[in-house]
Length: 484
Image (cartoon, rainbow, N blue to C red):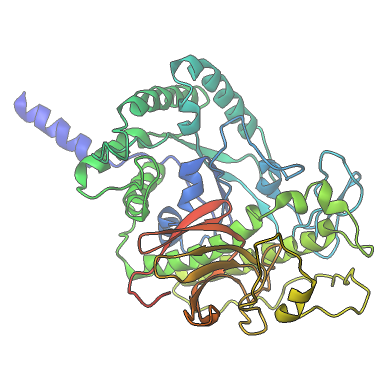
């Protein structure tokens, strides 16, 4: 009897996990959900493993995660296209009569149902695989909100099961939230025990709803707890958001649960090459999907015309360019996965019409020192000229400044205001100015961080700066002391 029990145990151990998802060539995978989905774009280990294991399938993957989302709550700015639009992006001019070809552009009809072109798409994406990460934000409602969550999730799954985003009804895999990691730092972080009680409740509820809808379910709550126990190093930055190491450790767990087989090794050089290509694609998609100042692109302000041109038209055309840039990087990901060389050229971007200046007079802009003559200040105050973009070309459109403990002035500069274009080469920057103590004027300019997009604010912190670059906050460090 003991031998039989041992044999059964061995059989159970070596029996592979049943595959919950089978991919086919040309599948389009959408990652949806809240923070866990959103943050995976910045590390991309799971997507890299998927491409490594399926190099010839030429899969398109788009991250539609949105940290504040719940399964039935999607806060967006005025007239921003809903998630369903991005699940089914179609090139062509969209009117009330349907879709018509128009040089790779598409209109999104917002709340007002305007007839003019106010939204563009330069490349298509028709999701037929959805990886859905829900339950974390909802869990804060505790046991009292559990029944409403189950109803909302059930409705969501039924809607997706009956949807068609251009390639037939999608396959769906539902993921639970990860557990709250105890960072054992009671001064700065809770131990997660109260959070985990709710997360466990909601994860079990998700499993029930998934089973009722015959949807594959992955229990990341339990699996993440196992990972936390295995590693002495923290796998999250704050107990609830994975750091890069955590994303790297969780990716093979997700892969095996979804595909029923061991994931490729994360330390393979080919996986890292794929991951770098995916990260570059994700950057371009992030600028597209989470583009800054969306009210200025989609909302009422976007349709105010200057010299006969509005932001909705011009910035819509730029969105079409971003779609094509993302599609170009899909090609790069596929090539790297197949062991080929591929150089992204972006020489196929659709045109963007020029915006005429709305200042027609010929009055020249004054130099900084000259402008002082026209300034008036309260009694007891004075203004001194110390620098401008004439002396320091990087000093364009300063947004925020702050002095550090060495007396240097840090400035967030926006040459790309209101935001970067798809063809920008001169990006926003975080600048550091050394000041001559004798004259009080700028003596030296160092670009601490380049390649930014609308860094609205920053706070000096330890060996770097916390930079708010919507929708993310970045900790940008100087790790080698070179001032950059």
